[in-house]
Length: 546
Image (cartoon, rainbow, N blue to C red; front, top):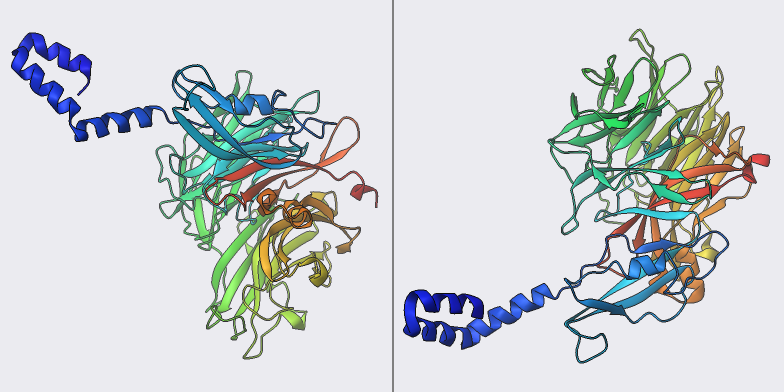
């Protein structure tokens, strides 16, 4: 009870009750409660976005420079003055900062509260768009997570879950590159799942057709969609739509593609769904899967003739014991099936049937093809990426791969995208995504980085491809883990997990070529930190000249 309330009771209940109230206030329990309330009121609230981007041509930021100044001064604690202990310039990397809240003049006496957190300075071209509690926030790479519309706006989706005070489910944000080359946002991070089940494994994907954006996610065991349209009054969202398609992926969600006539969806439960009326109503069909097979991951793409191509990992036999670092007879195929606009399924096949290394394994081997991703180019050639164990024959010891089939031709020999490099601590690579530029492909890959025998995190590269094979050296995307090892600064490590690249390149008015991507960056030196969701613009102009 406060002194104010005790004074009010005096006029009502008399001096005896007032004395009793003051005695209770002076008791240890009441004093503890008052101190706890004051401590709670003195908490320092920090922003969700704890990363800043270096401006173009700038290598360091002083604490008084925007945007670092804006981040530092965005902390609040009621009406208290707040100071920080950061008095040095920061370059790309991480720094531990302590904020202090003062009841009176800053620096006089003892702070009412203090709070420490890590601030990340990102290179120019990498902008934090949000946070997530899920290290798989931009998984699975079977679906598009970032794309530009015909108006030049960049649309992004990811999943947030497992974060105290955060949302759960699919999240959307829209940004644009200004005339000065800097990124700015037109929306805050926006939950999409209002009125629908908010599942931790919503794992959304999107498709852009002109200035129309269709988003899909899973919730309550089904696939849901929403449509964003642009008219004279601006962008407007339609309501969530229940497709009726079963979708219950554990670590992967549905994939979506659109054209002027239909919206197409494939789910990890083996269901194909389509809509003729912009997603207002839906029809569903089972994907043709061989008897005895089970679908695990699936992706779909459209070609210029309206043919839907679906690629999926088909589980024939699971490994017997994944706890041991050895094979045990597991076998998953990588299958392709197509559906014509008039509803006929055709061309169902094992895409890797011609290559014995991906065939039936020996008893103590695992041959597993997983995390399928498919794209179709303007000449109707099919590009396929996945990760698998044909080289290691051991579950989890995966290598990212790519294969191409020209229109009317046969599959070219699959190629590894980023081979192991023992000298640099690189062992395995995972879940590549695809970007197309005409008939040219670029594959985004993330991979393990070891410091001696100690696993340090994931870095990522982009591999340019032409005529079915790599056409140049891999381009670095995120190299924070390798840099932290070389500098002996593990607190700087940001582990890049599931970088998801846009489906096509973007050419700026200056003739330069860019790939937009959405990355989940995990602060390895700060276990309690949320994961950073970062919009990365990668200049690939040099790779396009080869």
